Length: 66
Image: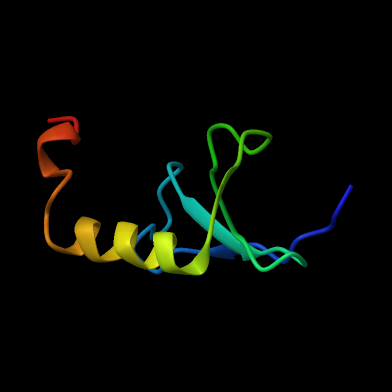
């Protein structure tokens, strides 16, 4: 099992619903959230970049809980 250096998103603040990312030795980017730290997503750096740009552009705003 790999040991990752997880970095918390600067947008997470001190709330309990934090998003973390880490780089894997194979070049992929791992992502998890604090409510389910054992479940991770993996993406290539390019795909992760597309995802981040979409988040910043508001593409997923309709999914946010009120």
